[in-house]
Structures are given as C-alpha cells and as structure tokens.
Image 1: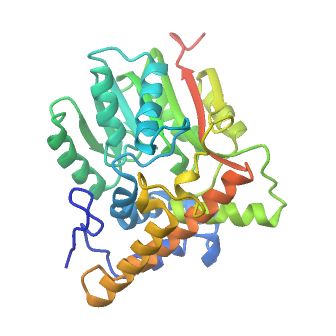
Image 2 (image 1 turned 180 degrees about the vertical axis):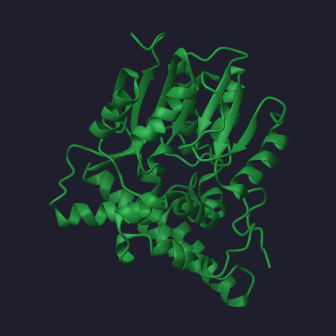
Length: 341
C-alpha cells in the first residue's frame, strides 16, 4: 500500500523493497562496511540510497535536493533558486544552448536553470524512480519539450565527444567513486572552450583524519547521504587539472555566508518556512512514519530510512558547526580549445 502525504510532494509514493534498508546500511562504516567496497559497488549503493530516500527528500526539501548560502531575511526556497541562478550565470548560459546536468535528481535545478536561461537541459541520472518522477514534474512545469532525462552512469556517459555547450553538477559528483574518472567523462562530452561548474561536498582543511570525532561526523554524513567517501577540496581541484581542465576559480561558498547553510537541519532552530525540517517537524514526521508503518499504511522499512536520514542531519550540522565539512565548494573550469593549450 502507498500513502501520499503532502499533495505533489508525497512522502510514501513508492514501496520500499524488503531488506533494502539493511542492504544499503551494510555498505557503511557503522555496519562494518569498507570504503573499498563502497567504491567498487558505488552504482548499486547510490541506487539503493535514492530508491529509499527520494520521497523523504521531496517531502522535506522540495524538488531541489541541495543546500545554499543564504542572506538574512531570505527564505530557504529563495536561497536555493538564487544558488541555481548563480551557477547558470557563472557558466554564461545563452538561449538555445545544450546543457548537461550531471546527477540531476528529480530535476528541480534542471527546470529552474532551463527557465532562467532559456536553454535545453538534459538530466543524467542512474535511478529509474527519480527519472520517472522527474519526467512527470517536467510535464507539469511545461518544460518537457526542451528538457529530458537519460538513464546512465556518470562514470560511463552514453554521449558522443564534444556534445554539450555547458555542464554542471550540484552536490552530485560526490557520489562518484573516483573524481578523476568522473571529471574525465565530463571533459570528454563538453565542447572545447566551454565550461563545467559544480558544487561539491568536501571535507575542508580543518578536517583532521586522526580525530575520532571528525571521523565519526564524516561516517554519519556518508551513511546518511549515500557517499563512498568524502574528498577534500584539494583532491577535487587536483582531479580537475588531471582530467585536463583549466580551473578558472574556486571557493567554499559556506565561508562568510550570513546564515549558516546547515540552519534548516539544526534542531535548535525553528522556522515556519521550513517546518518539516525543524526539530518539531522532524519529530512529527518520525512519529507519523512509525505509526503509519505499524498500521501498514507506510512501507516496511520507512522508519529505518528515517533513522539514517536523521543520523545524516546530525553529522551535517556538526560538520558545519566545526567547519570540517562543506556542501558548497564551488568551482568553475574550462576545457581548452585544443589539447595542446
């Protein structure tokens, strides 16, 4: 049985396959999983993760599953749109251009950027459920003629060389087992002289791998967000250069943000604008999920999914407070006009 709680942002829009939460959890450190196994089986792990959490994400966060730097007096939704517009402006998008969104989720940013820049955007995603949901939302938004989805692994893209006028990724390529391999594929499908821009999830220079508390926070983020490993900002830049890109500029946009990016997840903060993400809202959701699963109105395993998402939220907030983690490491990079450049 399926229950839709919240109109077009249904919490229970699909069934959770039996034992899927347990299978996903076993990939991670908390349950004896190894980083090598996560990297070797990244596609299965990430697919299991998004099969489990997509409805929860959409219920709590909306159609764009990402964070944003935020000004005082600005709502979460406004900051998310501005963050997407900033990316489009950094890429210098022009009407009619062909753009690739790598790891597009259900297409919230894809639709926003396509409307903002009058471009045609292709969303690359390896999760069947997210693609079907994205296609439905494209149709509702009226962008189904200019925007589409392709089901594929971003480590092995099914596009010819030099296919796109611009490529972007929003908090998505962190799922790649190897940044260099992922960036190399992006380099291949991007036209010469054009740009790739992204927001990456990274450990900052303040992260100490020998600090047990830091390692615990990192592990909580990895299990709660379907990540094989969280790279450092330096590793991302090195991988871009190794892939052949010229790095135009990079910056952790979390630094200096007037409102902390993690505020919507902070249990000490209350906001009517993002009630579902507050401590009260999350407490309500958790108990609602527990009751509905007990009554058979929510899929078995829903409460378990809610639990590891809560663990992720705790890790994200602590990582943000200690400034050892950022989901807002931005970079813009160009593919040279010729290989010799």
